[in-house]
Image (tube, rainbow, N blue to C red; front, side):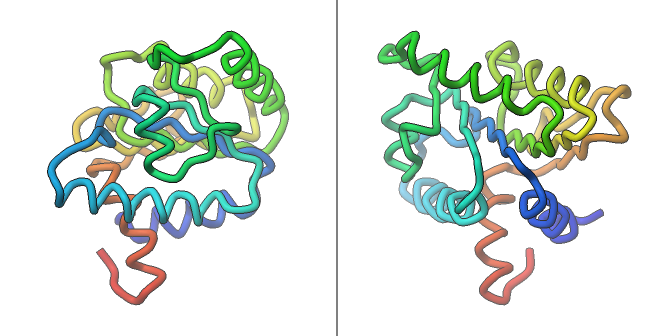
Amino acid sequence: MDNSEIRKEIQEEVRKAEKILVGIGAEWKRGDEDREEQIRRASKALRELLEGKDAFIISTLTLGEMEDRGFEKEHMVAPLDVSLTEEQWNGYTGWLAGTLNRTTVLLELGEGFAHPSLIRWPFERTAAINRKARLYRVHKTFYQITEELKEKAAAVKADSVGFMEGFGEEEHGSDQ
């Protein structure tokens, strides 16, 4: 499947999903002016995709970086941020526990192996345990899916920011 087809599949799965868990990693870190503009467009496309859905975001970025991208603090946790509270972490783990036996989309964007115990491995575990879960892993280098998850997951070899930016571009008539 090409990226356009995968985006359509994700849109359909998100539309049907009861829960959506998004992991945002290092590919979304601050960059030069052009990269910042690309991240802004990708963030907008992601917010639009999640609009009206029961969604939660976990990120290895700082809480400030995530808020700068327009994501709501109430539905987000940044475990590496010094401001993380036990209450925030408990909110996340409680929300995550509520995904069991629910139609869930796991959208992993740009998370490599710097902190796999925060996003990568928990997303794989959630997909393996929950029969109603579907995992999408988007990364330019570390996109691979384990053999056990081949039927429940899609690996997308792409820069995750550019991939998400494509959601907005497709809605406005261009296809990348």
